Structures are given as C-alpha cells and as structure tokens.
Image (cartoon, rainbow, N blue to C red; front, side, top):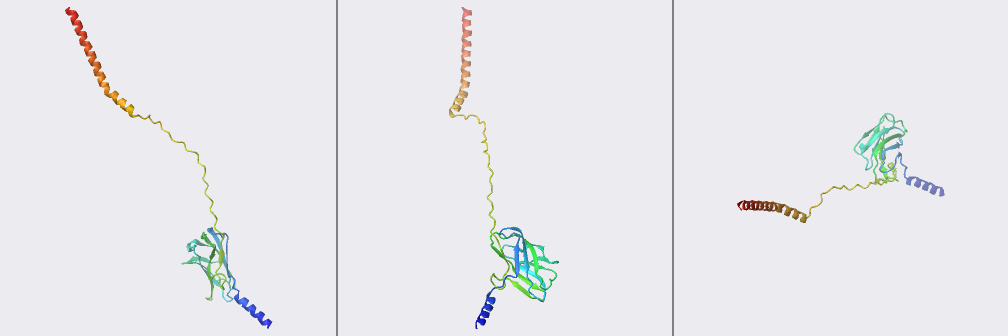
Length: 217
C-alpha cells in the first residue's frame, strides 16, 4: 500500500511540475533602454525524427521588426522580418541539433522589466514546438529579465562670468527751465539789436545837429 502511495505521489509531482523553457535567451546588455543589444537564443531540438527547419519569433511590445538585425547562426541561415517579429531559417539542421543564433536589437524598451519572445520551432516533418505561453506553464516563452534603466546624469552647468553692463555717453538732459531760457534768449536777441541800432541812430542825429549849430554860430 505504501509503495502504491509513493508511486502515485511521484506521478502527481511529475505531472504537476511545469516544464522548463526549452528556448534559452540571454543578452550582452540586459538593461531597460540599452542600445545595440546582442540577444542570443538557443532552441532545443526535441524531435527525434526530424531536424529544425526554421525558428519564428514574435517580438515583445516596444521592439519593432525593423529594429532587429542578424548577427550569427547556423551556416546558411538568415533573418527575415515579418509583421510581428522575424523568422530565421536556412538549410535544415541535423536531427537533435539545437538551433543557436544571435540577433542585434537597436534599443530595448526603457520601461520594461522583462521581455517575452514567443517562439515557434518548426521541423522538417511539419511538427512545431510552440513556446508561447506564460512562465510556469508547460510551454513557456523564453523571457529576458532586464535591470532598470540607467538614471540619466544631471546636466552640468558651467559657471558664467558676469557680463559688463554696456554704458553710453548720453548728452545731459535739457530741463524745462533751460529750454525756456534758451527760447527767451533767442526771442530777445532781435529786440536788443534793434535797440542798439536806434541808439546809434539817435546818437548820430544828435551829433550832426550839434555840429550844425556850431557852424551857424
């Protein structure tokens, strides 16, 4: 009886334990907001009768297909972008040979803490391994854990020297009194001249009369 119970418990434990991810993922700069990041994938070959023909990946939010470029992989393989991600393919791999390749991502999302790369591993016999589910399930997608984005350094402000205040040699302001005096002087000048002329004229008349009287006497 105890043997049966132990065996049953072992079976339950095995069936309840979720399978580990069969597509591994790692990056040289696993940090949110990082640029020019090389991400390496290793898709395990689980088909004993056929080799891997291609691997298709659906990109997580924040990474566009145009942001991904080929780095390295099996001989003859290449990357082709599609609507939601990319496909890497080439000559079929040998049976039980894992598909290992690397791509470069222009920039990782700045606010992400992890990135799930849902993956389909296609075999030459038409079978497909679907690693697209959440973590803890039987078919989990490979997840890349990210460190928080680097905090931008505060911009340094160089001290500036005090700028000299521009000065101008302004002419002294003319007050209202000065203007009035100038106007009065300019208006009085003709009368002064006229008075001088009149005085000189009268003096001349008197002088000639005086001489005339002296002659007549």
